[in-house]
Structure formats: C-alpha cells, structure tokens
Length: 86
Image (cartoon, rainbow, N blue to C red; front, side):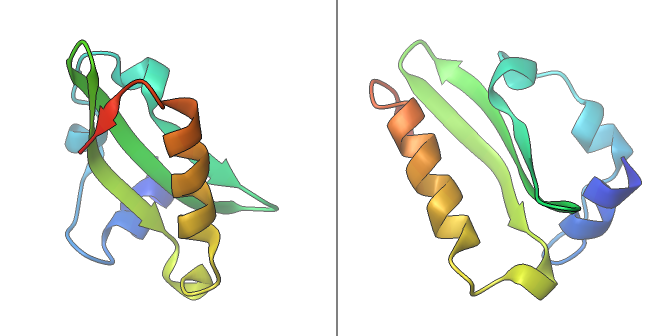
C-alpha cells in the first residue's frame, strides 16, 4: 500500500483511505503494473453497464516519458473495446 501512496504523490496525494474505498467492479478492473518493482497502477470502476471510469492512472515519475503509460493505455483500451473509457 505504501508504494501506491508514494506514486500517487506525484500529482495529488491519494492515501490509504482512497485506495481502499469501494467502487463498483473496482477490484475486478483496477490493476498494478510491475517489472522488477511496482512501476504504476490504475484505479478503475464501472459507472454504467457500458462505461468504465479511470479514477487514477499513474506511472512512477522516474519511469515516465518512456512509453509505458501509452502501452498500458493501449492494453486497457483493447481489453475493454465494448466499454467507453472516461
């Protein structure tokens, strides 16, 4: 949990309370990205039957501008082609 909170401080801080807050399908849709360490995460929920909301999408600051975020967003879009992402 502390690694997620640390990465979130890059833009606006999300604390443990925000990460643990329950949202529709959050546990099914959200994910972390790993290489040899945690490199980022996405907190997602289902707002309507055909829409997924992206609450937080973060890549560790030392790994930004290397295409990792774009790559993860492409995978996310491909996995949810029948859902509107917003």
